[in-house]
Each structure stands twice: as structure tokens, then as C-alpha cells.
Length: 157
Image (cartoon, rainbow, N blue to C red; front, side):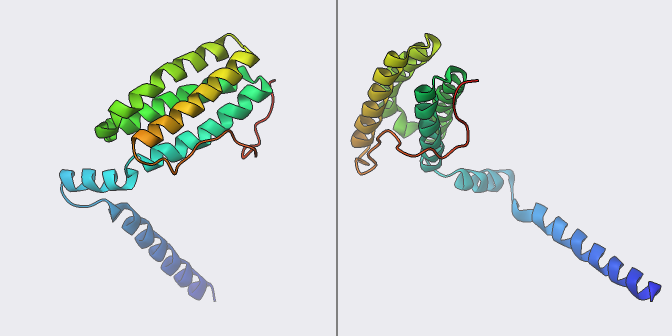
């Protein structure tokens, strides 16, 4: 009985080690081929915008809650994520230039912990997002302030 159990466990261990090895082989080919594969997985600007959409939502609620540290974190991540996305898709950079001023103004309102300033600058950011979407011929992606929280992070400490 013990020999059967040990034999079975050895077969399970061997199967697990083979499955683990094959998982490492998804990125194959030359260095150029691997970069092409990774680039395809990162995709275009759509995944960048997916992340920015999430952070836009979080930024809105952080400002509404006067959670200025969290708002600062989110606007910083929006700025950084957009820069990385534009590095991958430089053809989108000219239209995206218009977002720099609204981001800077919103950062100032957050630093000043100014609720009215935040609300006004957030509205400016939203309008600019929609203007950029129109310029990039994706006006059907109309941005508006969120009505539902999607994160458990609420309020200031």
C-alpha cells in the first residue's frame, strides 16, 4: 500500500514539474520575436486607457472624499501611465499633449487640498479627455464622472 502511494505521489510530482516547465516556454524565439510577443500582449493604447479609466474613477472619489493623498497617488499614476502608453504609441502623443495642463492644474488643486478647485479642475480634465477622444476619432468613448464606486477605498484617514 505504501509503495503504491509513494509511486502515485512520484507521478503527481513529475506531472507538476512538467506543467511548471511548459509554463515558462510561452515566450520563445529570438530576442526580437520575444519583444514582438510582449508588445502584442501590452497592446496599443487601449490597455493604457483601461488603467487610466480605473484611476480616473478612483481619483474622482478620492477628491469627493477629500482623501488628498490618495487623489495625489491616482493623478500621478494617470500621468505616468499615459506617458508609458505614449512611449509605446508615439503617433498618439500630439493629441495627448492637450492633457498636460489639466493634469498639472488638478495636481495643484490636490496639493492645496481645495475641494472646489478639485471639482473645477476634474471637470476640466474630463472635458479635455473628451476633446482628445474626438481628435483621435474615438468620440464614442465619452468620459463622464463616475456614479458608482468600484473600489473599497473610501474617505480620508
